[in-house]
Amino acid sequence: MFSKILVANRGEIALRIIRACKELGVRTVAIYSEPDASSPHVHLADEAVCIGSAAVSQSYLNIPAIISAAEITDVDAIHPGYGFLSENAHFAEICESCQIKFIGPSPQAIRSMGDKLAARETVRKVGVPIIPGAQEQVKDKEEALKIAKRIKYPVILKASAGGGGRGLRVCHNEVRLVGSLMTAQHEAETAFGSPSVYIEKYIEKPKHIEIQLLADSHGHITYLYERECTIQRRHQKLLEEAPSPSVDWKLRKKMGDVAMKVAKAVNYVNAGTVEFLLDTDGKFYFLEMNTRVQVEHGITELVTGIDIVKEQIRIATGEKLTVIKQDKIPLKGHSIECRINAEDPSNNFVPCPGKIERYNAPGGPGIRLDSHAYAGYTVLPYYDSMIGKLMSHGRNRGEAISIMQRALEEFIVEPIKTTISLHKEILKNPVFRRGQMYTDFIQRVLGEWGDKNGDESQEEKK
Image 1 (cartoon, rainbow, N blue to C red):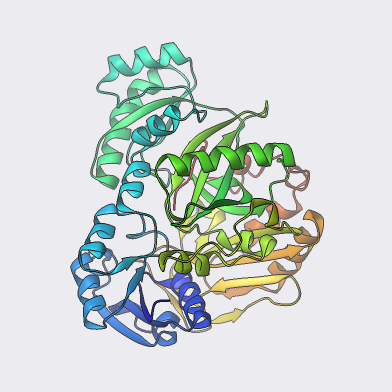
Image 2 (tube, rainbow, N blue to C red):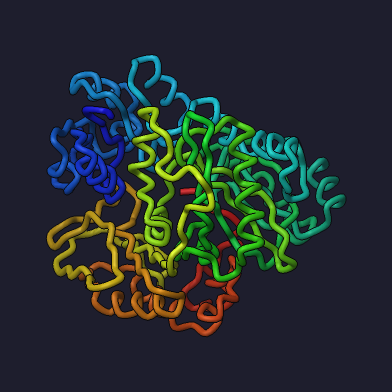
């Protein structure tokens, strides 16, 4: 086991990792930007190093500063959490060259799955179903029109190196396609440093299902079943469930087997998630693989009893999976996660940074809250707007919904605006309660809350 780990992140995920390390008897080092000096992860860690100013380029994306902090504090490993440098193959390579263990997959696996076009081709070669579309980037509007004519409208433009909804445009006709191509390319270059985009058939009324994987260096690989991530806005998840109300045991096994095939194709080791679109005919298609711990990993932990962050650390030390046989992994009850963001859902989800003056965290049976917020904490404008992840666990889906509704009533974060009110609306909606939602649920069913200027969402990556 490692003796000391540097946590290269902030907020609730930094707290989550530090807590796992403490339970494993591992010392921790927190890094922080100047305005994050009062953040709880800084004080909970055994050591803390300020690595720069507020801008992420000068702090949480500042590789030289992070490596320097790791070397000065003499750590064995770095856990990147999610976001920031978690899927940066170059950072993983630098860690290796400095004899610091990167707690995640190999740089080669990160790179293989990081480019959407390359990932599509990799999984296609091993028989994984992919959405019909181009096998390479679109060069100009003539080529785009030719591809769209072949696969038929509607189509979707996607950034090859992207995620989080940036570089995505849904097109229902030629005029929309031509008008969107340059915009998508510019957005992709601004966000990811590459203007490369490609075209896929747009799957209408899909569900977004992801499979959680664990793989060790001894050749063992398992899947911790699925999460339903269909409730989204601006291509970002709002609410997740485990297991999915749309997946039975036959489909669950089929999707799990395909997800493991994806991981084996790139010799994957550590925790990872394979994401699929599920259409109305029950067919599913590969979307992408996230080579990191997911934001929503907690609901999988609640229904399986397996601590994914601890597994990541153990795997990185060379240990075998805690549970090796697939049929020994339990699936108990139902869990729901509501992402609580400092945003105003009634005003196009505009971010609402500011000081929290009144804060009451919900509790009681069946509730887990992963959060770094507290009364007096200031939500900063420089970073992600997430305040916390509220999770419920019940014997079945109905009970999990009831527990979550009760917890949302208890949750007070004032005076800033949050998504708590929106989650209350979602949970009481009859379409949601029947489990009949699709990725455009917010726009179609809760239009008064939705992003009225956004495209229908089809995928997400934090």
